[in-house]
Image 1: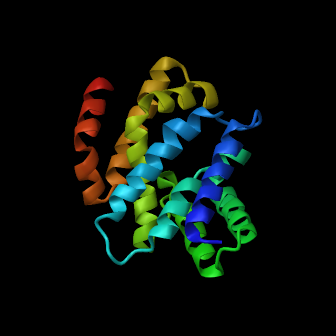
Image 2: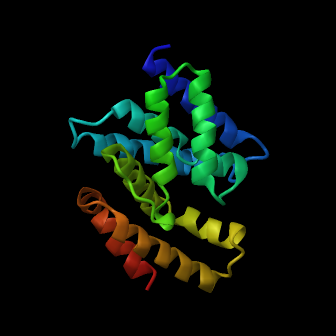
Length: 188
């Protein structure tokens, strides 16, 4: 199977999993998180010549599949496993599967995991950048999934954005600086 076909199959797989009634976040996550995140990942790829863009795109589509299918807790681990199984089914080379799994495993900023490749940093950055486009989703998660009240949710969202900002690469900060500054003003 050509890589373009693999990417299309992965995209369809993620969309279908998001639309299932048992999806932890519903179909909103596909449109409000996955699509913008993939867009940011592709944008960040433009700054590098020596990266595997196929790994970045596959990782972007699959980075939160563990959260969708199994819940947020340890979703970087469950997601890496699910991605490996899916990519194996699609006949993807083991080398690419391993790189995708590494990107998914290390994308979580809250775990402080070391990113050893440019591809992994792009995935972590793109994931964070998409959060600045979906602050309402962060509030929804804080209120409905973390059971916080509005005051707690506001503090939680602000802290998540502050923490995320600190972990971004300089290029990613440059892309999102205006949204970050606006969010900090609104959340003060």
